[in-house]
Length: 585
Image 1 (tube, rainbow, N blue to C red):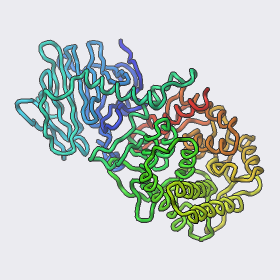
Image 2 (image 1 turned 30 degrees about the vertical axis):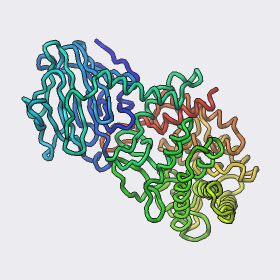
Image 3 (image 1 turned 90 degrees about the horizontal axis):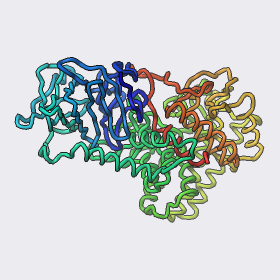
Image 4 (image 1 turned 120 degrees about the vertical axis):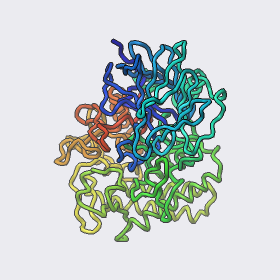
């Protein structure tokens, strides 16, 4: 009997590389046990619509065969390879280029390749008789099989088989195309060793630039965290809608780069200032005519009725205070300023229905806190956190505008707007003891203990000190949010507490935004405490974006499209190595 050797478990994280839409995954109902797992080659050029179809994510089943019999296997991984292993030998896979998987076996085994088929993609096509290459549909793309060593055959209408040569060796390429393929000569493809070396150089360079080490207590998970983020990064390639580097959230169910995660990623990746700037700006590459950026950008850009809170301003202020942005071209800063003005004006024009100077959410989809209990007051819902983010964005527009040479009168106008909104936040959302939200039409006030209300503390010392003190007293009091694992999204004694996303779990945006808020309020001690609690559960239980507030264990209860749970998230992995570095020493 053999056991897998895992750098990452494919039940936790599909296996890809930076810039690639190819990935490997275990079967949706598989296990990490000998004979209980199945290796799939996956297509990440998917959307929710694609996922709603039965052949959305996992596209090609890969199995080892000996003497016509499918062998029980385990799946092992290194930072650079996926290995399908049996007691009779193994076959290794490497995503050597963004659109190319190379495969090699030396143990005399055959590789069976079974595409997911439908009436629209009935089977494979023999491309070129002399090369033996075959092509079949691969979701929205096409996949070409390139037999370098051994023989590729399709004697069965359902699957193909790659058999080894007389020396027991097989070498096969899987190349993705979005158009009809124009093959390069077979002798111009990289060797398997070249592919491994390419992945290694790319990943190790990323590790060295972004986080070369962590404090000893967090070092054990550093490379896995960096790998998860690196493998979820997308690049402009002339085919996808991405115009610059972005970081997607999670494979399969949330196969997109989300609006409010990009500024967070910019902070977490800020050791590389140019990369951080590009990722921050990427959130504004697509805006509608009213100035609202697209909520989540997947392979193909599509307008969305959703959005997320405008945390971009607060993060930009952090970047201007903590990073050397002198190397960023003025033209790029002007470009960003113009789009942030449009984004800020979107709220002022389109999300203040009663024209009282406070902005509101119109529906759950645009909140970022989808199951927060205070939304039971209905919509339009005015919230302190949303307005605090907008006040900071007005200040960021003012300060960036001054830096790029906008008139001083314009600076003063934006600053006065920010200060006026901050005053209204205190007047309208603070009851003397706690923060609340309210329905802008009915006036009904929320009665939940939801921590996203306390992201008003992102304003920091712009708030009166007594409000800061009372807020923190409640947060860390008997009805507050402090747990051994970080800050819960709903107070544990609240009548609304449940193990939802923003109604009682330990989740990424709560930890990060509240840590920034505590720092802004001068409570670095509490920020450090929350960061270390959170880093410990990520290290011990994995880079999931939802953890149980009572146990610290991962929570994969959120399911969709027949997936049994969530995978690791780059939202969590980047947060881990940043917080561990900043607060773990």
